[in-house]
Length: 106
Image 1: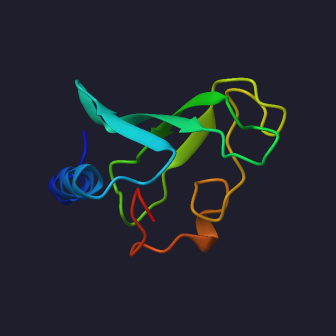
Image 2: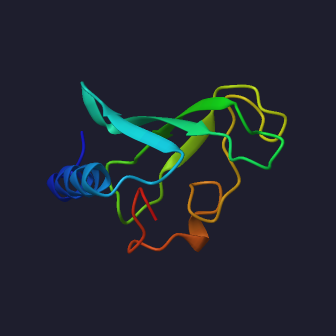
């Protein structure tokens, strides 16, 4: 079960993301679980990924924002292993790099 602060923070971040969307990315929480988000990335023009759409999931721990989310890519893309943790400084792959000031969109 998510902590109350976690739920409030994720609701706030979702409202901010709806108000100011990030280009080439759509991310939404699961209707039944605010701790699981689904995203789709659109490949940027001028890259080998142009024209592609890539689906993945973000799983937030109940202690978010004090602990980082886990990020996985489901669509095969030639860059990341499918259904494996993505190595990012803002993910639980490198929890020591996480900054609680970061958000879903930044």
